[in-house]
Amino acid sequence: MQINPQRLAWTVLIVAFALFLTLAVALPFGARALLVNSTRKQHANIALAAGSVYVTRPSVGVPEALFSAMENLSPGAHFETENASRAALSFASPNNHSILGTLQLYGDTEATLLELNTPRFQFSERPHRIAVMLSRGRLRASVALGVDRPVAMTVHTPQAEITLERPGSYSVEVRANESLVSVRTGVATVSAQGKSTLLTRDERTTVSTGSAPAGVLRGERNLVENGSFFAPLTDGWTTFQNRQDADESAGAVEVKVQQGRAALHFNRRGMNWAEVGVRQELGLDVRDYQELRLHLATWLAFQNLRNCGSLGSECPLMVRLEYQDAAGNGHEWLKGFFYLGSDSGSIPTRCVTCGPPTGNHLEIPLGRWYLYDSPNLMNLFDDAGSPPAIINAISFYASGHNFESYLTEVELQAVE
Image (cartoon, rainbow, N blue to C red; front, side, top):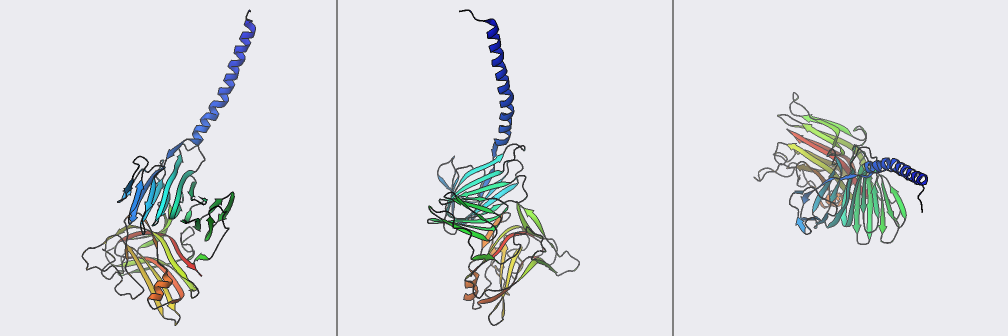
């Protein structure tokens, strides 16, 4: 059979043209897909806050005790904390090392990193993605503010998938056959069994095994306004300054962004004593409350007095809660935070001029976020013989000669 040269030429021409069109379309789409979908692994670190924490890295395969910090964690890293232990996870962009979010693991908690991806190219509009599995226990999540692109943080539990959609502070807890989700600030979507519940500030929900979310629940409310300092400082707070020498600086207090969080910044350098702080009037009747708990996040950057000074009243961060009992008598509860300790025993670790229920101040790490959760203050005040009737005000301040500290996530959570 003779081959028709003309037909062969047309066949070759048509096939070549088809290949040209395929390449002309595929190459731009392929290049775009590469630019959009290509990712880099984020920098993930874990730091010990208290107690005993064990980390199992995929490259090692066996649990390792965490003594201070561990860097360059990969997906698959597994964490277990013992009772009363705590650890802090931080996630940073591989592009500019800006903080994207943090996780605080509480005691008796088991969690696993699932995803730590950031788009490789600026062209991509996809978010930074962080995903973790919380098998049991409790964590506190913070999504960073002011990063170069949105952060999508997802917490998986045996009962639900929780997507943290905006900068803010969130709490997730797994108890037996139930997951509990609370939004302090921000927005979260809780999904299970094909249904979703949207939570905003001071809202919570529960998800039981095999069930959909229970809807938006209340019963716990935050008594402090603008405690994450997203709004101007004048919203809810008044500032104050005191100093020994009028010719020296009284110190400054202002809102700044520290490691991805809007925070109150206390800063002062001087030779003599001074203090600077903020105060919020509350005037709340708490006689019907069952629980009252304080939560805050603080970062201590500098102090020059060991402990909290000779009288235990000069910490780089202090909180004062003023209240009165049913007879109208005034009381105050004072708590200080410091990092520069003393082993001599001659410098007190509590305010020596303050009466009960004020207790010891707390020594915490330098240069990292520390989350504090108080005991039930209603019980604490009652045990001290002064059950509260009215919470008058709450103040946060820094005191001493030279200090620098940050404060955010201020919550006074009340349960009626």
